[in-house]
Structures are given as structure tokens and as C-alpha cells.
Length: 469
Length: 94
Image (tube, rainbow over all chains, first blue to last red; front, side):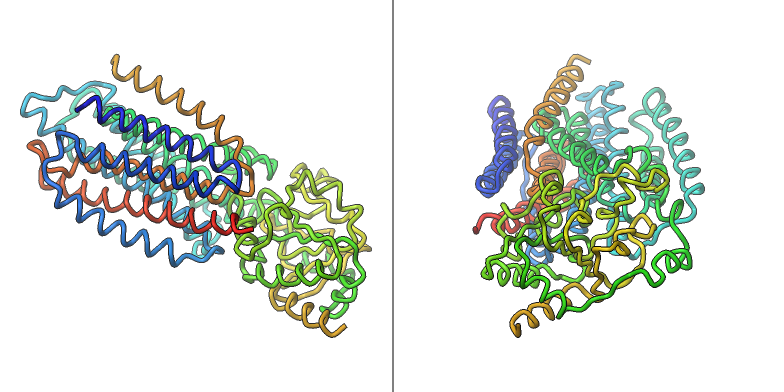
């Protein structure tokens, strides 16, 4: 039976790998996801036939509670809120691993009394690691959710948090050393204390990071949630858990490095450098002086006339599009332009929005064909042949200073070269700086026009004006 | 210790497999990839089930923790797979 159970875990892990492999193309992705879910079902069945499982009523209760909450969340969530959703799920995953480690610790006590379990260093280390990663993922993710929602602002107490983080690590190392060498199975309070320390650590690690860097943090916590599972696998000696946890861990690490590259920052700088806006940003008066009298304002009517005669139009969506829920209006305008014979494309910067691929999901929701969504490196050479580039709520990712001004805090960050288009139309609610806290030279260039207002409203007005033309 | 080295071997190899496979996922699908891996990380449910299965070595507290862990992991599994499916169907319909 033991052999069959382990084979079950192996097949489940293979199904997960094949499932992720399906994600390499939008055509096969739905099937891939189904394969992964079959893998999960198999893993659950394998766990249920384990000889240690003799009663099922508690398991059923847990599954029913979790299943109904999960289904409710999945049905309700709006596509604009996906970053918060993923961050929440990261935290929940971390919490589950933490609980599994704690439960295993208690059971090991009982088993040791019965003479069926002997403690070892690797078990102690695995328990501590599992608690550490699980707890940090749990509280760190919920701070990230607060920052994504804008409920927790950027902190100016970076030094204080760093100090607490150091204190937590010292306590943790001392406590873990004592646990591994001295007490092991009779240290309930020590374990409880370490859990609390790790929960605090999670909060203090994420608090000093700026809201702008949340795409990196969410990706990293995604990785942690997998590693937490793998650590739980080490505690339980379960290979299925280890393989699956490390797959998720690898995925999160890759996304984290893509995000860092797209911002031209190192992971250490993101995690410990504090908020960019707080360190490098300009004051409100400096910002006003930069733009003073140099911005050319335009209107939806003028935009409609420009678009009427354009051969090629590129939309550049940013976080502002998500906030304004303007994806459907964008698609509607694009449809009108296409029926007019205009070529329409969408330029997607890797860090546009609040998580990897966020813009793509929003535009897919509005039924934009995915082959019209063009990545940065492919679209950049095309801007010089573009008649109108419409920037919808993006800012730092189209700031020419990133490629020209070595003094700029975002110098070196790859950007979308929208300034090469014949006309750039910026739809934005105001002239407030973006995440990096610096003014944008693009807005005062010769070929730039600013249409102030909410992206959705401006686009709808433009659609109305186009109909009247 | 032998057991630990075995587990470590599997862990390291699985990370390499993960990196190879995931590097091929296009940026357009990165959000569904994240929610999909959220679902997969619900695999800790396996550990939770064994903890709350009520055999001789469980205590009241460990059962409570186990059931809570099952509930949390199931949220991840159900919400993760369902929301990923929702998103992927948006990409598919063209």
C-alpha cells in the first residue's frame, strides 16, 4: 500500500509539471490547468488511503469549509483585483504550511512517548524552516494586500523596521539553536515564541517596501508559499510535497527576477532599499514647476480626429487603466478603429499593472485577441511608424529619462519608447508623479498631448466623438 | 540523515525541472501561472489530511490545527484552480 501511495504522489507531481507545461501557450493552457487539478485530486486520494488516516469526519469538515470559501472567492473576484487575490492565496498557503508543521510537532511528541519516533537534527531544522517560511509568507502577504489596496501607505520608518528584522533574526537563530541542540520535544513555549517572532518578522520585512515594488514582493511571496510547502515536505518526509513545493518555488523565483530586471533593480535593493518615492521623489512644488505651462492640453474631440486619420495606433495600458476599469472602453474604441482600417496594437511593459501579466488578463477579459498584445522588445522598433500612441494611466514605464538621464533614479530601466511615435496622447487624471515619485519629460515633449481625466470617461467620450464625425 | 539527503536531492532536481518548464511560459500568461501555482501549493493538504486523520498519535490540539490547515489548503486549491480556469477561458475564446 505504501508503494502505491508514493506512486500516486509521483503521478500527481508529473501531472503538475505537465500542467505547467500546458501554460506555455494560451491554446493548451486550459487543459494544462485541468491536468494539474486531476493531479491534486490524485494526491488527495493518496493521502486519504494512508494508514494513519482512520477517521474522515474532520477531514470532510475542513474540506467543506475551505472549498466553499475558495469557490466564493474565485467566483466573486474582479480581474482588476487579481494581484490582491494572488497575494491573499500566497498568505493562506503559507499559513497552511505553518499549521502542518505545528501539528506535526505535537504528533511527534506523542509518537516519541510511544517509542515510535526519534528526533534528529534534520527533523528539527525542517520544523524551524517550515515555521519560518510559513509564518513570514502568512503575515508578509497580508501586509502586501494592504499595500496593494492602498490601505497601508509607504513607510518612513524604514530604519525602525530594519532594526526589528535584525532583532527577530537574532532571536530566531538563538531559539532555533537551542531547540535543535537542547530541548526538541519538550519546548512547546519555545515553538510558540518562535512562531510569534516569525509572524512579526513577516510584517517588518514587507512594511518598509514601497507600494510600487509590490509586483516583486507578490512574486517573491508566491515563491515562498511553495518553499513553505517543500519545507513541510521535509518535516513529514513526503516527496510529493517536496517536488510540488519546489516547482512553485521555482516559478515564483523566475517571476521575481523578471520583475526586477524590468525595473533595473536588484532584489536586495527592492527588499531593503526602502520606497523609491520616499528616497528619490520630488516635492509637489518641484513637480508643478517642472510642468508649468509646458503641457499641451487636448480633448476627446481632438483625439477622435487624430485617430480618424491614423494608420497605426498603439495603446499603452498602465495601472491607471485597471483603476478606471477602462479595459472594455479600450476594446470598443479599438474595434471602431479597426473597422475604419486602422492597425491596432497594445504595448505591454513587464511591470505595467501590479503583478506580472496583469494587463494581459484585463485586456483578455475585454476580449482583446492575445496576438495583439505585444511585448516591450518587439513593439519598441514599431513606435517610429506609429501615428498615435495612447498612454492610458502609465507613467514611469514611458519616462524617457530612464534611457537618457543618468542622474534619474530610474536610469537604466527598460521603457516603452512611445516618444518615437508621431503623436503621443497621454490620458491621465492629473500630473502627479508615478510610483518612482519623479516628473515625466514625456508629458512636455513637442509631440505629446495630454487629455486630462479618468481613462474610461475619456475613451467613452472619444468613441462618442468618433461616431459623430 | 540518508533520508534527508534523498529529500534534498529530489528538492534540488525538482527546482531545475521547474525553472526549465516555467521559463517557457509567455508573459501574457504570468498572472494565470501565479494563481495556478497558488492552487498547486495547496498540496500541503496532503500533510494536513494525515495530521487530522485521527489515528492513535494525534492530540486534540493537533487535530484542530490539522483541520484548520485542511480548510486553508482547500481554499487555495479550489480558489486557485477555479480562478485560473476563469482567466484562461478568457484567453481561449478567440
